[in-house]
Amino acid sequence: MILQTTLVKAAAMLSLFDVDRATKQRIETYILANGGVRRDHKIAHILRTFLGVADPGPALPRYLAKYAGTLDAALARAPLVPGVERFLASAGFTFHVSSSAPDDEVRQQLRSRGLLSCFASISGASTPKADALMQVRATTSGELPVFFGDALGDWAAARAAAVPFVGLVHERDNFEDLHVVKLRDFSSPTIVHDCIATARLR
Image 1 (tube, rainbow, N blue to C red):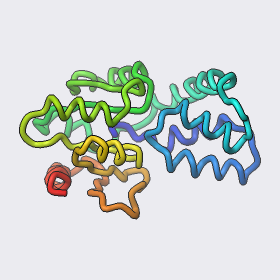
Image 2 (cartoon, helix red, strand yellow; image 1 turned 120 degrees about the horizontal axis):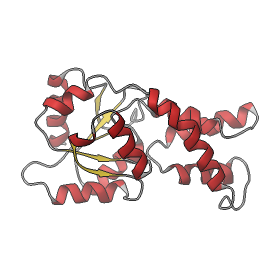
Image 3 (cartoon, rainbow, N blue to C red; image 1 turned 180 degrees about the vertical axis):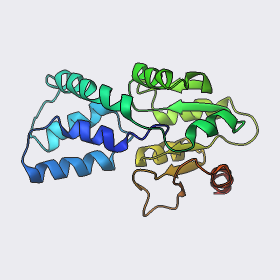
Image 4 (cartoon, rainbow, N blue to C red; image 1 turned 135 degrees about the vertical axis):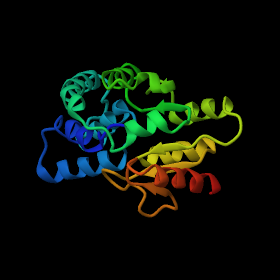
């Protein structure tokens, strides 16, 4: 997690659906509980489950295009997670990105913030997160790589790839009932390094 996008993305997706208040609340709960899931999968689930669309396939491209248009300007304004830029510049680690967003969008967002060169590899929606983590693990010697994520899907991917995990809770704590190392943000290098060390011991 580099940008503060959890609530921005949730609001953009929620705006796609003209439904009654109760249904909108259920959709919002679903969106927030499923961060890290590919947007096409989430929208298809919403259309099927909450709007009763038996076959979301034909309508999906229109929803995805509208979502991308709504999200583009919002992402440009999204702030970085506090301390992340300094962490990337000075931590002395090799960094990789794994995101459920489209590959081109991930690269564009990093490029626009001048962060593209900070990462040895960048994986978007075309590579499942567990696969991306296993690829990184296979090329890493010594200590295991540590995955930072803010969604339950991130935690599940880390478990599937058998890599340590740190849950970021700056915008929302999705790990309340889980035995997860949690990090508010990257403002304190000491706390970040302590979280990495603790995650590797679990």
